[in-house]
Length: 371
Image 1 (cartoon, rainbow, N blue to C red):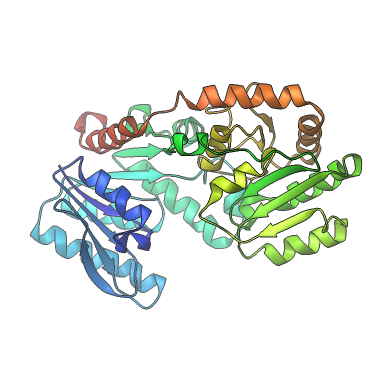
Image 2 (cartoon, rainbow, N blue to C red):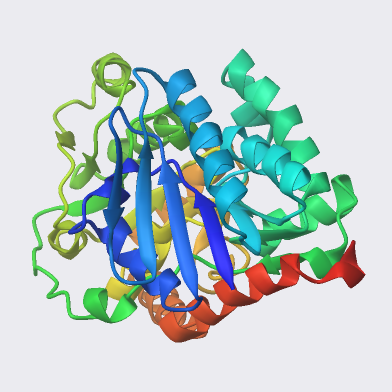
């Protein structure tokens, strides 16, 4: 089987990147795996004898997307591929749909984010609203869809009328054994809530800050560490000043050494409006951190409310605050949630099983009986 993949991850052009190594693993599953990514320079990098990546060339995003289309079209005119796989159902998904129609090739679309079931994403900008309708059209026309949670799968079935047989759920793989080795730091002088990620509207960090401002009124020992970067950072710091909690909230720049970050925390908090899966939840669980989160991503699937996490509705300030207070005040609850989450994530697919599901999703696109 030959797979032509459209990705938005330009780091694949770096042979030493994590993404490039992941592409090599995908390539080992098939006869040939060719990836095209947006980049300013047009170049081809051979990752191994089965896997290669081509940069589209182009000065801006629009030119780069058009470059992906032109590059792929030239390749398909010379060589036959069995399946086109698009990283998302939006811009590259639309390119994949056009080319799959032109060259009569099966189309596999990946949906890594919960873009459709929540209103928040499409309300963030007019461009997102346009993408919503483009994505819905591409999803309906694709031959197979790979999602990262049953939440997304169920929405596509009920609202987009996609046949269940065309969808395969492949949770984002996390090397949990790496996080199980984290040595927790023993401390008694404070209680640390931790959040890792981009400072963007999606993460709804104002909800977390407002909830924390209520927590610290009762528990002066509480601290909140936010690790990341993004366009909302200035706004978040202004909120801290308005709430008079700036001395209890620490902003740290993003680091690749996240294991040490988990080691310093007592609880992981995720206040997001939407998530595809939420790999940080799996990492936090593997380190033994109890979790307070909104009902997004892997909530209800990898972790269950009151069993392995405390989960409140999206944008529910009272519910999120209540859960933060419960978890800081109840040591037995923290221990129970931690132990249950550790057991829960052990049931997730391992690396070989995950790769096998990727292969199955491509084969599914070739199944003409599902059309």
